[in-house]
Amino acid sequence: MEQSLAGLAHLLEVLGSSPHPDVAARAIVEGPGAPYGAECAAVLWARPPHLLIVGSHGYRPEEASGLPTINLAADYPLCQAYLEGAAIIVPHDVSADDYAGLARPGSRWQHLRRRLPDGDMVSAPIHSHGHAVGAFSLNLSRQHTWTSVDIAILDAVSHVLGMWMTNPDSGIPLEAEESMVESDVLTPRQRLILGLVAEGRTNLSISHTLGISMSTVKQEVSRAMDLLEVADRRAAAERAADLGLLTGGSG
Image 1: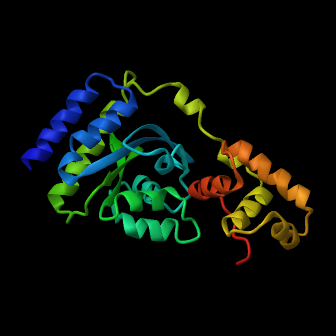
Image 2 (image 1 turned 180 degrees about the vertical axis):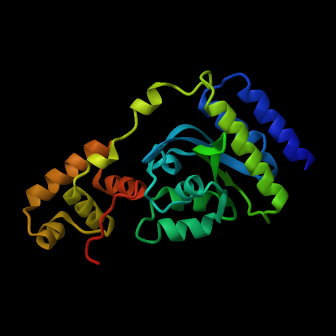
């Protein structure tokens, strides 16, 4: 308890200086997250129908993939925590199986499991005046038996972050909202094609399945890559999956 209170005091001190959200994320790791073996954290701002990342600390590039914008319709712990207004704790091995599986060995979930195989992933809302205004994610190096006191600590972090996030001097860059990927511009056909890409299908196989030319498949994949700001077709499928945009292909 003493360590947890000291961690909260550290977070309050840092947030009092209106830091950049990356600094706030680091303060979560080094403050209230430290007693639990926290390795990395992300702070997300709610702009329904999305959660938009505004700050992070400790993630490797491959682990941060898919975090910049998350569609609230996706069945992910961060979305559930925001919508339900309560913390959700899932072991990394479970999250990797549930949200990536063997079909997506390069997903951020699998990368986190490889680095933190015995840890927990904490997803929690950020509250202000009784309403969720965002969410934060905390990834731990070890699993923990969560007590009511621990949940109370997470709730305290939630409200402290809410006070900071809703302050006009919070330090959240104004351009952050403008940088959000407009994921909804993907067409139904692009979503369907990316769903088949996620299954490991070739462009030729996709063209036969959908009854369209291979050049059309290539064009649609290329357009989706541009919209999702990724460099290859596999990354586009993984990004679309993390945004909850994929349409089932072969059933």
